[in-house]
Image: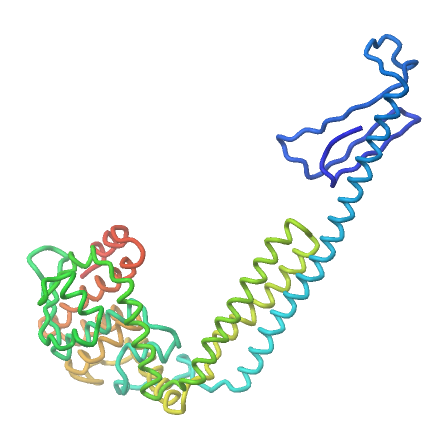
Length: 391
């Protein structure tokens, strides 16, 4: 007689007098308890004996335990089979949903010229740098975009960026207070982080602007629809479908976790279905079926312009435009991570004295670019990197 997990089995060899217990999934700190009864003739020197009546009681008890164990095994097996069937069905339905959504959307996908295939465009796009970045990748603006936003504000005379007496510390002054009325993140930067008229990058280190930054992202993203670059209805369908596809991945992941308890057979199938679902849901994210005709045209212009900046080493920047032109270009270079490359080429084509005002902006870009993620994550780790790389 023995007590061990129901997934094990016992084999008795009467001829050899062997009892073999097999248990593959027994934890290292768990043992197996075994009780055995032998006839008195076999153990004549053993004084711990019981009557024949006790033998019958033990056998009767073991029969009940064996029947109960077999019942639980059958129930476990049925549960495993049922879970396997149901989980496969649910996973298959979610995967089919993803595949259908992908193929239906693919049929209506608009054609955007890739940046690689774009022709160099030497004209500044008709949209600001933040909008240009959204059009290019279809995503909400990031910290690079916010850096570009501040540079454009400085270029328009709304704010002013100055170096302070302290190393790697910059002061941002407010020149036009009316811009705070429509921008919560600027309002907080100047009125909460700063003294109402200015703030420094040192103060920015301690700022908590996650909510305001999210509002800014949403406002800039919606602006693309209001300007007729994205089709609002199609974008809403795309967004809701994307959320639906994300949910299907979580459903399959949940089923996979549960399968490790009930059925390893189901887990293998769920991994395959999950990978298929993940593939089509990720492919759907790259579909651009919500651009308007105006949006397509503008995006192609943006990509041609960015390709020109990326290939800037192939041109004489003076031949493309005077310094005032490149001052307007810098927000785009910042938004697309090309500021270093552009400034390096400008250093070759223009003298340092002429470029001095422009060089003042680049360090602040680095600060904002690195500090903004810190608003949501951590601060000191990035500041160290910043102080080593700032111009």
